[in-house]
Image 1 (cartoon, rainbow, N blue to C red):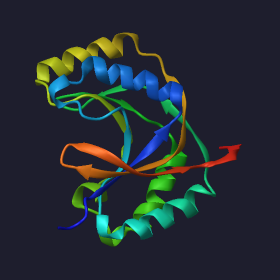
Image 2: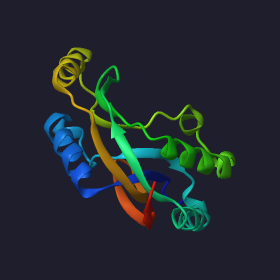
Image 3: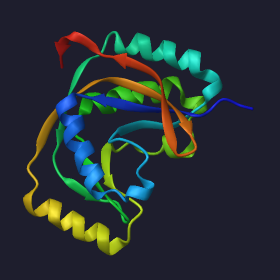
Image 4: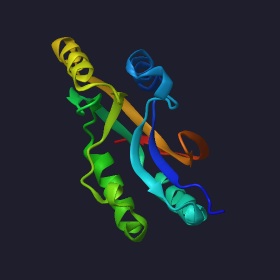
Length: 173
């Protein structure tokens, strides 16, 4: 049996995580909500390369300052709603990792990266539009921080933490 695929997400500061996780609990269909709020960097890295991936993450995170994040507005996903994430440093970090791991990337992970937090998914288009319009009418930009990277084993729906890699905390970008 081959190892589980790996998922890489951004570790959010506690206040930001709690805020978005609460929104996700309120609006994601409960029968499909197996995961806490997250910002995915890669959806399917090869489990058999876990040691190499972990070494790369340790090296990069040791030299990466905490990332300033801006959550400027909601975005409609068709059958869901997400909150956009603005952070040029996150885009650069993800591009650096994509270059390092280019031979392993799935079609999904080869696409243009648009970071976001999914608040609602797998609902009807009407339900998604309704929530989107609610959010747009009174959304205020939020700030937060990315404090590191989280590596997960994909378990066919749920995820299991494989490793946590904190950014260099002595400097804020």
